[in-house]
Length: 348
Image 1: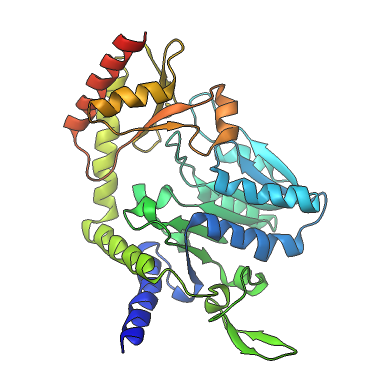
Image 2 (image 1 turned 120 degrees about the horizontal axis):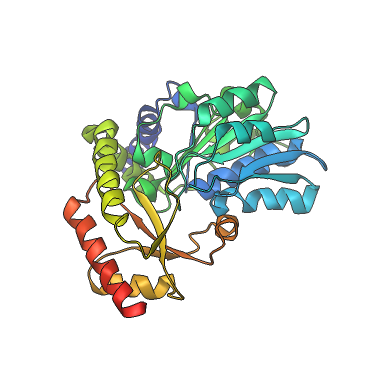
């Protein structure tokens, strides 16, 4: 029947996500609407039942709001303390500084694999190993990390690894979280409804086994199937090839942008993805810059990029962000530079 076909195609995506992320046990893959739902699932289903006043969550200042606001909920409602690790002047995030922030009251480290603003790559494996040695769980926000380079979640050993479909050339409203077996056993359901139950009576409810236990209600079937198609496309290209192409564009863009002495770049560490955040000298607002670039056919993002603490740390209210992907070319880097020169002429 049509419903059976839809179910089979939907369920197949669980295995596709597992292959893409190097996860051998697809039963650890929970399908959802994206990173925001995944992190809230951890906040409500795992952290909230076991954290109390005085417990700590370690974060970096470059986290996306999706990996900040749920932890503020715990701060507001349960008295949990948030401990912040700052980036270096070049935008790097030193793994050792994150490790040093882990204290006797730390219960969770929640860290981005790659910054959506600076492009900074984070060496999360030593952080995970050090945290586990102290009995601390680690959540890795892989929204950006999984699209710019190969990821092996089993090798990393993260307790929670979240991805979102629209960052992976898939539909919005799709995503997944990979949870370790130990944490799956500890997690409570975040949402209640159909499909996540074994039996419901007037007096009791029993739950399905994971991962279905955490997938309540009618899912985004079309979106999730679309995510599977996108991941198969990326695996067909080979993530090493995608990374090599983007690194080539990054190096070319670094060379070209470094010649613009009136351009103020945020995040210049060498170990970064092909993501560039910048402002112009003077009072030019990023929205004005992006408007001029748009008129020249160059699409960038302007604003705080859902990273308020990072903007405060950098001492800016907003930036322009140019992000290169598998479809971009050197010619488009040249077009960006040409458009920036025009913007500088008009706004300086």
